[in-house]
Length: 318
Length: 318
Image (cartoon, rainbow over all chains, first blue to last red; front, side):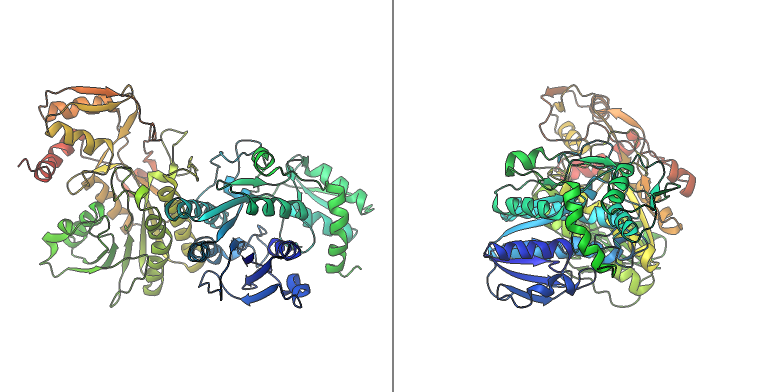
């Protein structure tokens, strides 16, 4: 297939490009490098199966020639208020990527009679009141809160995708992506995993907020990509959660990281942040198991071992 | 002030135009007549304080000269699956009015340093699990359901409006409009009030679904317009519910209508619809009372008396 990927220079877009090229497809990558990085696709520069255009998909999408699939992954996605590339700090770009970008990407799929896959997110569940989250949960998103620029943009993108499917017969798919980690992730993305892993590799005590009993689930990027590719090849039009349902407390997680990195600096407890980070979020992956025969295979220790060399390189430790 | 109103030929947009012209403002009305009607603004044709352009605000908004305020009211809004102008049947136009239309209207407000008011809706609460609904309730919207094209578009529009306020300092306001009725409403909009009032005026038995114990609250249009104008003149940026909190069962409502119209055909009970109409929705108007000093003044009987002549005319009974 000839596959268009928006956000191809992002963490997930670049891994997806690698995987689809390895399967024999040709990938046309688009990115405006607002949050994606040329480093993530530098290794593809010589490939005859990778064509790259620097584009803002919120403005316009033009693709020379026919495409068979469109994967819309372009969006700021970091929830770190201190990061200049976080969606908090790119609020209007984030909403445009979700609404105008989705509209343009669906237009390309419609014009080409191509299949379409939207990268959605567990953020559409907001601060969930139900655990784990299954796809029929309506979520708990505060429209007026700072996270809404991302959450509501993705909710809108899902609804528009289903509208194109129902109204125009576009062959759409929607993946709801949960917390993912691995090489090429943004070290400053503000989530617990990069924050703690950075501290451990620098020999610092790990910062745990509150009592450390809030939980997280982490999916290794190769597992996520496997799920997305299976969804792309499937005929499923309704949203599918892809993520790792193994839930652990942040305290357990910090202890695992300190052990794997041989960090002896221990843990520092500080007051719970005032920011409204969800206390818990865990995917119900029943649909992915039943429809795609998918479940994650890489456990946290193995995933961290594969991720640590990348972190060391980025931190100048290798 | 020179005031731009999108959706000016709609039920609410036309009443708002009347009111603002009566207060000495100049109104520039835009409408593409997909759901609005030239009839609603025909009486303004001679006014030097009303300028009208036939435009699709999802495409582009150009306004000659300076404007002091932008009121974005353009959107399909009927939840009647049988009506060709319902949002179910204009799903992509509805989502574009909410996303692209809001984006364009905010752009006009930003370029003109004008105040901005978004017409949002009680639909952002979806099928609420909390009664009455106050503005801090996150709602219960099924992203994958047929109503999502309207509900998620309005949620997105609210979040984008707040993003423009926070990021660009645009002087924005958001009104969440609950069930409203009065002259110029769409007789086919599918809500309980026009359905039952039509039947009563035609001397037919009123159709009540299920046991008639589901409740509704109805706001007369003059009350709604008063609340919106007060919000426009205020400095309040966070969403404000405007609606009538007097709740009654559909059975009580049907009996009131039969009495007022002297309809002797009674009531017919039929199976509850399969469509997911909310069972209850009632505004908590504490914020409107405290911030705007507003509350509805027209009770249901008085409002129906003012509405009946319009229905008779439309039904060819006058």
